[in-house]
Image (tube, rainbow, N blue to C red; front, side):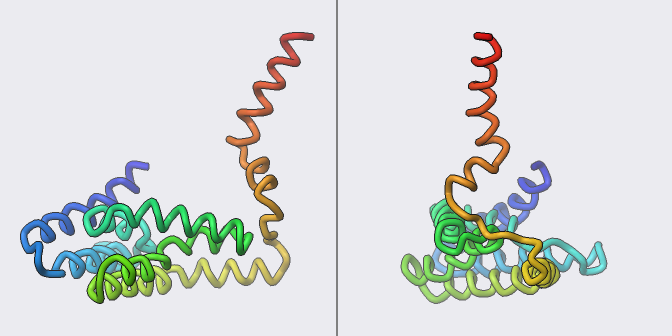
Length: 172
C-alpha cells in the first residue's frame, strides 16, 4: 500500500506544482504523462518498470480529481455488470478518461488521457496476452451475476456468514 501511495505521490506532486506555477498552460499534462513514462521505463531499472496505473491515478488528483472516483467506479460497474469480466472492469476506468475529458475539458486533457492509456496498454501487453490465452483455454470464467460476485468475495461472504455462524454456535 505504501508503494502505491508513493507511486501516486511521485506523479501528483510535480503535476500539482507545475499546474499551480503555470495555471493557464497545459504544461502539467506533459508532466503527468512524463511521470507515467518514468514509471514504466525507469532508467535505474534498465527501463523495466510498472504499468503506469498508479501514476495516472496520482496525476489525476492534480489534473481533475473527480475523474478518479467517477471513471474508476463507472469502469468497474460497466465491466462487471455489462461485460461480466473482471479484466474489463480493471482496465475500463482509465479508458473512460478519454470521453470524460472530451466532455469536461478540452483537447490537451484528451491528449493526456489518450497518451496515458496508450502507455498503460503497451506496458500491459504481457498481461493482456496471458489473459487471452487463459480465456481461450477455458481457465477463466465470466462473472455469472452480481450476487455471485458479492458472495464469492471473502470479505462480503465472511461478514455476513461469520455473524450468522457465531449466532448459531452461541445459541446451540
